[in-house]
Image 1 (cartoon, rainbow, N blue to C red):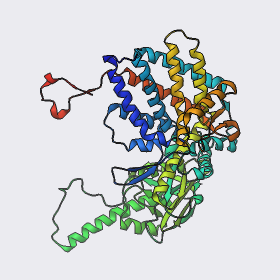
Image 2: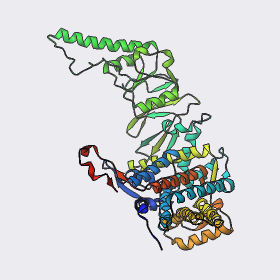
Image 3: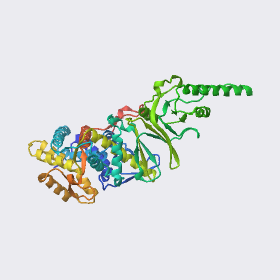
Image 4: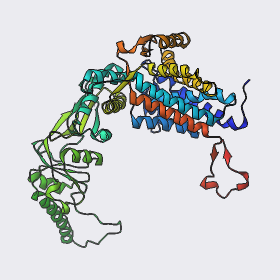
Length: 527
């Protein structure tokens, strides 16, 4: 006999919403995942199976749906992988909890048992299932990263993506400032050539050409000045700054004043004898003319983010006023080159030996494929960063989840209280990952899941699902592994999010500013 108390109605409703979000991306898990075609708010078509990319384009208004979308985003920012798994698992935890709620269990009682089971399960994984790997061995790193990339759209180029991500992280050298990868690994997409031409360039690439056709396009050991100010006559502070010109001589005098000011700025720059000037702002034609005569190359209107990367690579300081420029603000690089790729000119700046910023050059036939490659490469870089920071691995293909499920089922037999039911339902929630992998391969999960449970009970916890055909495999022989830190992160935030949702007994909409004068006796709106 199942009953639902009036206090649990809100939790049941939240569980239904979470299930709806999970249903959207459940088919995108694993190597045999389906693709989603999305029309974004700018009218562009996106074809992807990346969970975070799909969820962030969904226009969700319900707070529970927004919570799960934010959960996927947090997983992406933290470890770069598992964005689909974490939402599926959090939703499944809530679905299984619905059975306990209908049996009359208190939500706080369920949450307490969940945390107890989770802590024991994670300890079991670390103590008996994890394996350490050598971060110097590329083949071992490749197996782990390939498991992540194997579920993506560009899975047939998984080895190339693995090599790119490993080279990008290796470029950090002894610095190991892995938290700054998004700032110092820049991705440039070029719509020409083949995907196999993609490579890691040990320096920075800008989609810019020098400002004058006769400026130098190849410089060895250039001295570089980075500016955050224009090299031109200073404009008036306000739109009302105006004056009346009554004659030709007065107009010529004004033009001469402008030219003299620009020459003054160029002479200030000449003192430091730079080879290359890079400015985020405009550079006037007069300044370009004089700087060309001084044999100084100029790049103008460069993005601020690129200027910061160049600063890190060369040791230069971004200066906001030419009058404040000092010798210590100059930077040095090993080489500056301008090359033509396809129909565009690109500037390459190679930093001194030991500097870590680099550029990933991605070649491809279309913009859509390049966008998906960029997403996949970013995931691979984050996974490589995680494995280099925490070199522990677990068996993949759902084997880790089945190991915890088998562990919790055995533990539940020792309880004579409510924990007996809660631990059994937790085990059912963990089984959703291998079950989904089997379903996405087009197989019936009932028979295979029974076989997999039997394997884990009698033969060990290294048996998982081959995501390409749905068969049971020994993950050690096929080289399918997951990162321990990524898996633990999935389990922790999935259960924490589910626990937070279970604690919510009412969802109340506050009064909007437009309606703050309405009759307050009606009370707040409830979902």
